[in-house]
Image (cartoon, rainbow, N blue to C red; front, side, top):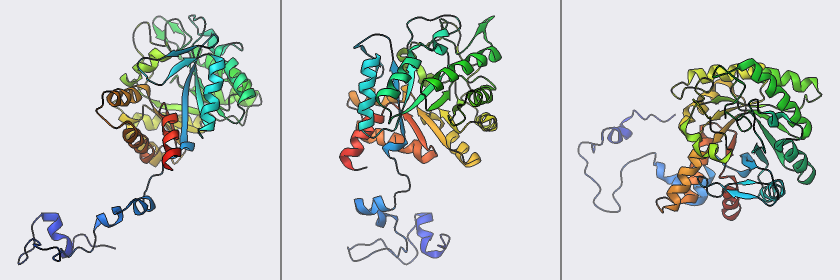
Length: 356
């Protein structure tokens, strides 16, 4: 055990050279330092050997947006490199992601029509159900995550059934259950409810078990905050609320104890993985969740976080590759086992090139 309170380290704590000594004046004169932290930073091989956090492509999930039509690629202005894709181009994108070593994608749908109850979201002929069936047939190696929420499909842009300008929790959960069953039966490997309705994890778990989907895991957006970092996503998914906001069901950004309560409830209801969203502004929450529960933790590196890095890089203010790796590493270091990120393809290419 190193005694950092001992005499050998006194001058480091105080910044004062010990009495009777002077600063080294020649290369041969050195401080008596039993520990020099720079020794293990001397070359790339040493740094790699003692690196505490490993970031690898197999930890990543790529979010994708699927839309109606053929040969449609609608670029998302606020998210350079991302686009709404028709089913034919989605298949190509997923194949490319698979070939880069990305193990999973999560799908968000842009429906042909929207209504008050978001019915295309739980339709067997809806955009996501069709995408799941096609991807499972054509790219069976890819792990398919299905986001479960109604905001992309409702005419009002909220995540559930509206009555008297309020999202009705229990009525919404019944629709989320239908949505989950449709997606699981269409080929989803993972069901990921992002709506933040109370009790939805337990209801979905019971429903999946009841239709023979006992082995389909649930990744719950357990601590999803009412964040300004979602703005580019709402352009991408065409899901901005038409009135009000989502603060009555998503979490207050000031709270972290509440996140632990949300996670505990979801675990008790049957969640297999819990998620914190966003990631960068909530690294402390990721760490608290991991330390408290010791369960698999996912974190969503959201659209606003991605857009800021892209914008700064395109302005020439930062090194995109270095900031991307540092960003994803910080999320991994905080305790995330799985990272959902729009950077996934860029990281996979860089990792293959540099042997990360």
